[in-house]
Image (cartoon, rainbow, N blue to C red; front, top):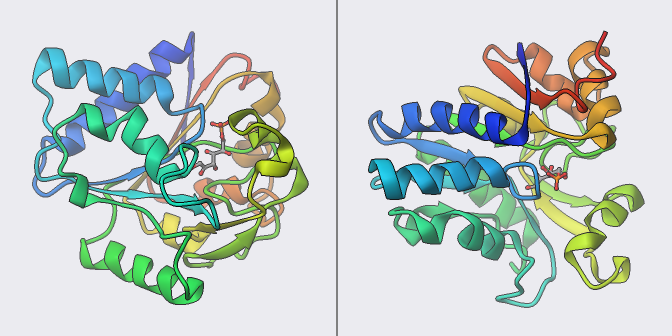
Length: 241
Ligand code: F6R
């Protein structure tokens, strides 16, 4: 695992955009996207490069990490809506090639199996962007998630619901359940790129990078992945030894 300590979120965004741009220039790119605050600077930089430098997403397939269960169709905080707003509607990717698990499906386990199969049928993800929760989650694999898990329904912890209340009117509006790629699914991506900024993430980053490989910190699976890169600012790196 490579850990890169950056001076600013903008520098992190440029590094992530460099990694994604290299994949986008290759044949039949398959990219893994995260939602939340952490990836936004990288998405803005990718949009800028698309507009100003001609970086193209044509022919790219994208898979989101996760989705809330039970939000009404078209809810602005559904991750399908968020990724459209923050990235995909601003670049030349075909909307039909942007995939997310369907949190409104009648049969959620079947939807999860379908989603894993779709990732496999696309040939797997070339580069997967990840944020990290304050409890060390990636995707919505909360602590004690199975290290070999595949896409499945999960219950959010109160800590994650509290953390995500800022996107909703109140914590009561944050859904209790999600569909998330499993740690095993995420681990099949060829390159994992995790980003974190701010002191609130420092403890989780230290556990992920320097703690034991353990389900207690799901992000610690990056230690065992063949190609993982962590971009952090100095505040998020402040608990590293
Ligand atoms: C979102 C996701 C989550 C977030 C994590 C950090 O798709 O998978 O794991 O990456 O909760 O969220 P932010 O970046 O908002 O702090």
